[in-house]
Picture 1 (spheres, rainbow, N blue to C red):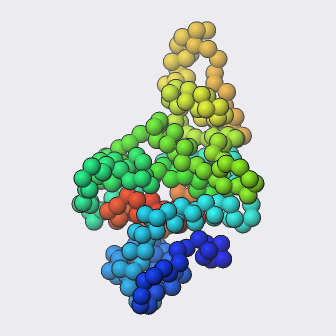
Picture 2: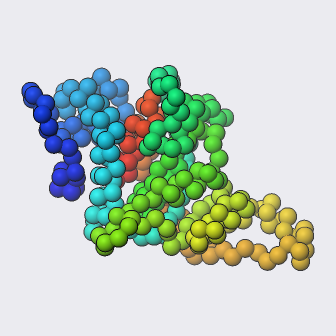
Picture 3: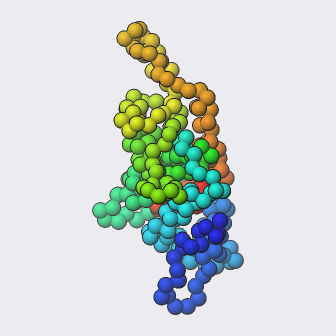
Length: 275
């Protein structure tokens, strides 16, 4: 893995003095992600905590993590992306340390998280302050796109469409990045008519079960209600890959509970562990 990402990291540049090794810094960031301590409690073997935090912030701004993710999607085990896409969302509690980020004048959202509005993707749901992670994975459970929203946000458009628009896989063959899946699998939370209509307009085949109230409403109309929607149960069984990906992500304490004030930094931490 290091052989793949090392050429993508920025060079030292013109700074004087001792330059902390990139590999040591990345290991420090990953340890912090796994154990979940404050930055100031970073182990000494990983160098100064300010160095790790500053490099994480700088690489978030200059797009380094985006390049690493794009490379990892293509080189992961040498197996191409499987375009049976599964998507879902999950709630994570926001710790009290995640609140209170300074708001820049005229800035309501991060470029990395286009829907992270009203306070860095922190909202108030039934469980208190929370953030919702929207995730799309391929047929092997590899993350293709991630979106952060406040915890009270719904799953239907525009979140679903923004999640699909964020998929860009640079396959080894020449040409533009691929974005459109062969099949999209989602649960009943995405069964709204507006969602199906938007997917049909994009020419995306989807496997989404109907909710019981939708079935009852169609049956009450009799012949005017139309035929039942096509639903492939065999393909739908593959939706579990996105649930397993969430399980892997939440093994890391800094992802299972949100401590970061900035939505953009948490977004990049998710990308690091997801790859």
